[in-house]
Length: 426
Image 1: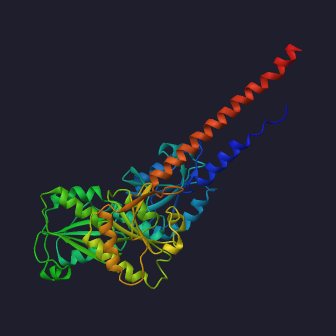
Image 2 (image 1 turned 90 degrees about the vertical axis):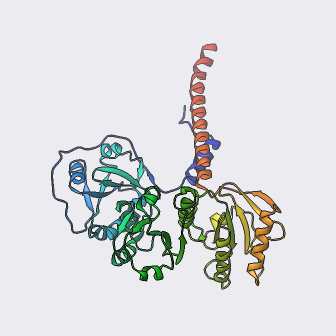
Image 3 (image 1 turned 180 degrees about the vertical axis):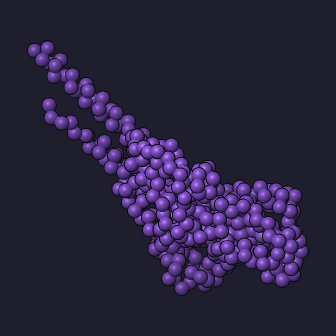
């Protein structure tokens, strides 16, 4: 009897599974690997990425207060692309006032070590804070990685005692995250949110400051919580009530995103934690279109007056994979929809397309129509842009593939028994 061949349906399902699964990590084996005796050693401070193994890993964790580890496999393409980013970030991190040492472990070779920390894909990144590991899932680009790690090891809320301390805090925070500066705000009122949103923003309270700071940050009384988003050059102020956690958290959560969100993979992921619907403007090109800056400026004004909604924009040329999930023709661009961030969106009757000219009036009519319920609901076509929807598809395809493979090999077992049965009958 010849070698069994898989039926076409099984082959098609398996290929489909391989195509749609996201290539963010490479698979890991679970076999046991090498060993070695632990040795104490000094962590070098020259900014090199350390190569660790199961013989010196525990010693490195003990020696370094903060150790950032890349569990990689030599054959993994994502790991190869990450390596130069780590080489670039390592000396910057090592030079911080509180140094972060970067290291890597060949977890394909030292499988027991990878298994100990739950490594099931490559690369897996972990920050060991005085021996306690936390998986890192942020940006892997060198400059953003540095800012993210600086944020993770910073206090939940920094206490600033002078104008110079405020300036240093803002400068050191960089451009990657929003900042919250509490002037005359009791630390106990925001420490909960400093811990809750630690991965997404910097928090501080200023105990002593001059009128120059009040002028610079444009507030005229205390207590005041100033939100600054340096990346988008946006600022807003919350005067209270501070004893009502709901109002305070709403202000913080709404300030984590810019007034008008440029849609990309990172911001879509951030939107998953926001309960608001998205007023999404779809353009042909959000960079080269000469009308885009003017339209976005009007959207920013609309967003300020409608904080119960998130306003965002995306260009077809910038992210076609995302925009094609909405049934929008190129002749209808630019257009606006209201998206629930899952598998449904609404178009407003009579406001299907934004005509060049008075964008303000058109956007006002769109919002009036939406709030009045003059909408048509549609389903997102193809894969849902949300992470939850995509994962559900992957899980379903995986289960179907496993079921088909099991059914196939079960059939092969029955087929193998039939020749002997026929021979007995003969």
